[in-house]
Length: 181
Image 1: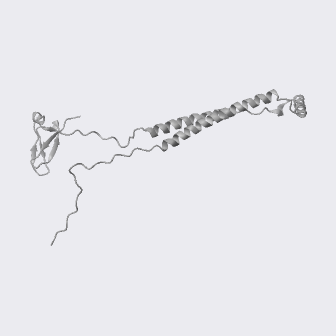
Image 2: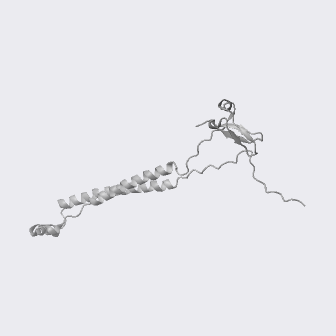
Image 3: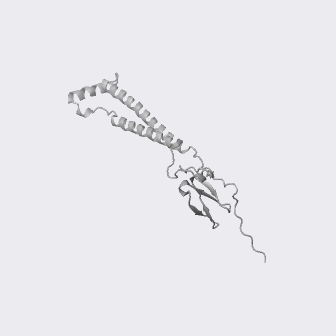
């Protein structure tokens, strides 16, 4: 950043000048012409206060809210992926319509005599369905946690922008008084 210097006028106005203006003349509001000293003379002047560049209004940095929203969205997407996967591999009951006649008759005889225990294919189907139900509940909990994280992110209070203080020495303008006659 280039150095800036304060060049006073006889009227009290302060002008900010840089090394590129050394040796030139500038005009004050009062009408006076002020000569800018040479480079050597500039170094004897008071340095101007350094103004820090303001942050761009268009680019907001990520805070806790945005991080929580992103984390919640990722967890929700992962949970929805799990739900979709487990839904696609859900067990289906065996198709008994395609049994040969003799096997259908044997199965009918077993059911007709009453339950003496579970058949192997029934036990296998029930175990698979139970396993599938547990994993679907787990995936649903993951989706719920992701959604809860996103909702909680929206409840985080946002920092309030700092109010600008009036510069010292500046007062509020008073309305001009009516001329008395």
